[in-house]
Image 1 (cartoon, protein in one colour):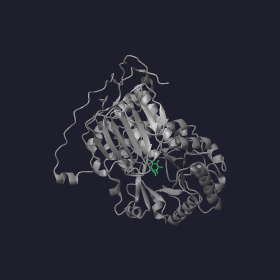
Image 2 (tube, helix red, strand yellow):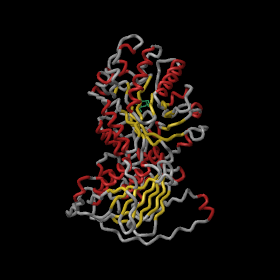
Image 3 (cartoon, rainbow, N blue to C red):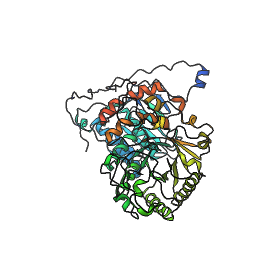
Image 4 (tube, rainbow, N blue to C red):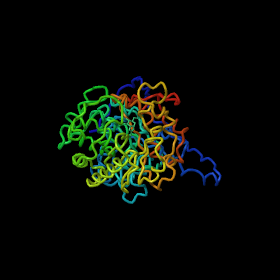
Amino acid sequence: MTQRYCLTCLSLALALSCARAPKPRAPQPAPATSPRAAENAPRSVSHQPSSPQLARLLPLPQRVEAAAGERFTFTPQTTIVAGENQPLVMNVAAQLVAFLRRATGVVPPVVAGPEPAPPANVIALTIDANASTSEEGYDLTIASGRVTVRARTPAGLFYAVQTIRQLLPDSAEYTALMFREPPVVTLPAVHIVDAPRYAWRGTMLDVARHFFSVDEVKHYIDLIALYKINRLHLHLADDQGWRIEIKSWPELARRGGASEVGGGPGGYYTQEQYADLVQYAASHFVTIVPEIDMPGHTNALLSSYADLNCNGTAPATYTGTEVGFSALCVDLDVTYKFIDDIVREIAALTPGPYFHAGGDEVKTLTPDQYRRFVERVQTIVQSHGKQMVGWDEVSVATLLETSIVQHWRPDASKQLLAGSPHLLLSPADRAYLDMKYDDSTLLGLNWAGNVSLQKAYDWDPEALVPGARAGAVVGVEAPVWSETLTNMRDVEFMAFPRLPAVAEIGWTPQAQRSWNTFKERVAAQAPRWTALGINFYRTPDIQWRESNPQ
Ligand code: NGO
């Protein structure tokens, strides 16, 4: 049953107003362009959208054509029509219902089947195997009485829904406001054709240095999905803690999980909890990439099992922040039995195609020992049906064509990187979200320098590794290391606004991105972040908006 709630407008800190349907705008004449300018113009994107709603889309879609017709107005009769009754599509429809309910006070019904003819007021979500959009792309048309989304995959529909979400009032993000006077909510007439630049648009959460609970990780997934991020790399083991239950080596979680930086209690995910996280991520079209860092960064596991140590003695647990002192005993057979067991158990719980084996900052092995170790681990990972991802040190080894090198050290050899089969880009001086914004930032580190919002935004992944193989760059990832971050408020502070900057690098074609338009669009996110309760950093270089015109 649909219900409407009627209360007077509250004057809230969010500076919300009782929105009324704005008068339709007169169509804007197209600016005159010379044939030469048109030739050089990036693929027809409207940088001056005629509606303020369109001016806040982030990441910027590939093509936005504001249309002259009437806006779409939500009514109590608005119905969501899903072309197919398949679970992934219904899941996308259900998420759209949740946003619309908060935006309009009405719960639109979802029906499966063909699109009803006008004048029915409909939002149609259609999977079309022949759609001209790419795998994760979508085609969204908003017109009077009808919103049509076409995509080849449910992921494409999901990204279109995130775009629609960004066009809805910011207040729709704040659950309690659903009981205000029902506003008239409208969407601008527009045609958007969109697709991501890269397949990998990621972020990493270090749950090893400080543990983050299942609910905290789910909260992070909620936030990243809004910006069309599709990979969450979980750094599950480091010197200070082991964070996932392994049935064949139970002390890993029991002992290795009971510590963290600063001496706190730590924690770990049971296999059921991890599987639940994987499932939650999947419902937001996010693939979990599990990382067990090795052969270095292994004190937590070495302290759990004496047999894994070259001298047969387990070291004490470690709660400091030094790096580079620990290493697996690469000449012991049991080391490879151990690796095989953990990769097998984690791979079985992880439907995504990746297993991240770390490989960074090993200071106690010879170059030859290190190379042989990486090559052997790569084979184990492959034997369990996964592609290996490794930090950029692994580029000294002979890598399989499927392996992915994650570039992080600003001074890593560009020549070695250029030979990598696949490159995932997380240069620390641009994409590390644990770096301080500026000298006043209390949280974070600064070994790679301060990373201002502009620094995080203003770079081209294709220019980073000269001579890289064509198509080698799979995408970008923004890691959040947690030596100094103890809770989600800290993570939010470091990730917002820089994570949306990296999200746009991963999504929007280079020629269409510019710091100046990003500045405007990121400023317009502030009211939404306030409604969501995100503890974001109001970087002084942005004129943050307190409210957005609807
Ligand atoms: C480095 C190091 C991590 C630190 C991080 C802090 C990599 C790949 N290894 O990045 O252990 O936590 O810097 O910024």
